[in-house]
Length: 315
Ligand code: SN0
Image (tube, rainbow, N blue to C red; front, side, top):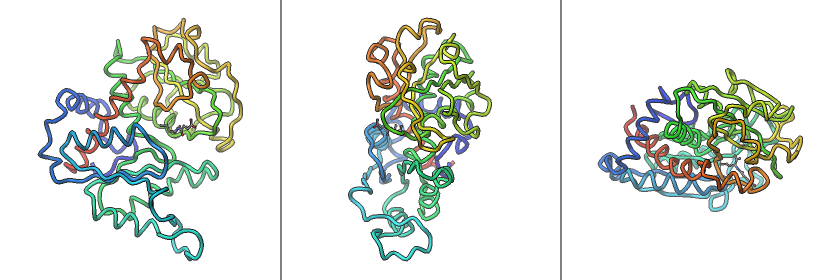
């Protein structure tokens, strides 16, 4: 694998999930592969799980990890080609990515969307500039439109908990106080569909995700109907794709409660975290025995480890 930015960068989701589960069973089996190798983890936005699980994954492989919060600790980056840099930006991404590549064997980068220009965000301007100028393999730590390490961990978690081959997997929109990216939802849909699951997406009108990610899923604006028979319920807020980056409603009738789960197939509940408790999801659901949020967080290690391993092997 030469880069890891979306599901199409891997040849098979079930095969990658199997590899991750092998690593989970035997995390320190490949320390020779990672010895004397370095991963750089570059953050333009906050992180808890991605940062620590990727570091842990690197350590499990015997690698070194260097972390930089480039938005706070680096020079202000210029992203435009040919810019006359006589303003507030100090260093061009071309020079930053080029230099960082000299210190690392793999680089991970987190670059959230601006949520102002749909065109800029959806052409992945920052990530693609970084890949263009970075001389070593790049992995996404969440980009403008996708969060592939999260989705990979989610597929590992579903594999561990599913009771039949084709579970009904429901992605439900949740209210939030802030405009959030579509990245986690886009990516979850992309990976669940690639896993050939029965994917249902439910949200208020106006929150349709780009069809690029949801083609093949059932879209239903009725949450109760969507939840009927669900095996897994993935809860996430996202801002509007159509009315780009806007909050169209904060309707708290979309908040998931135990009562709403009564017609599911004793559904397991998933969320990528961080979660705004009692806004996006109620305490009673998050803390119930059916909640998989900690299992997802743990599997972030093995998703990152499987990706780092493939990038180091270059196969
Ligand atoms: C990010 C998102 O893409 O939704 C990262 C999730 C892994 N979430 C947030 O930015 C939450 C911010 C907030 O204020 O709740």
